[in-house]
Image (cartoon, rainbow over all chains, first blue to last red; front, side):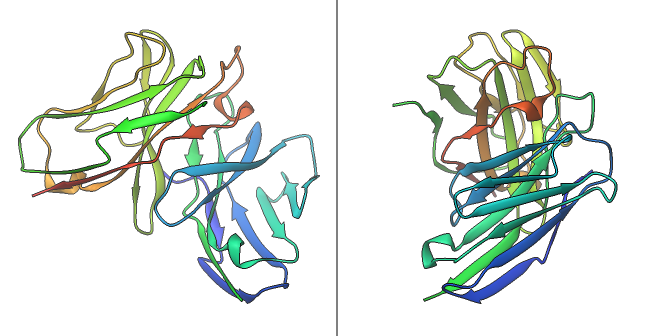
Length: 111
Length: 118
């Protein structure tokens, strides 16, 4: 069963704008990660946020986590055409060794 | 270069013909995993392995087998492939869990294997 659901499914913005995508999950978690996938290629890890953290930054990426709402958001600031990709959240159900990925958000950044 | 390799990258086969997709990592990672990716469904975990000789089912294990006889290799076996196993498959690895759950470590993904079962 899918734990993570991403919203929106697709997003199209102009270069230089900010892109925000959201992830919701169903059970308690230990950590939440975000990955990027370029057009059918392997996923690349972007950032990890622990369940006791509320916000984390990495370069142009900002991730927030609200465990009370079971949701996370990924903000990409000053987007570039190279940011065009699909973005997935991933986590585990607390106490398991399984990974559960969301359905992904397809981001298109127009030059 | 640290990497996860998969072979073959593309495979077209027929129903019922046994096949194996190999996965190898050179990072001495303990945790390895197989996923399938289908449009609109994201990635779904098939099997994972915590270490040599330790494997367990993910969310969609039916129709698949795995083995972990060596730390670096984690092959995915389809004993009798069916058309509903047509998909894009990814192998991934991550450092040891050290008793923690999977999500404490980032995963490194292979390039993917596109499988078509006719």
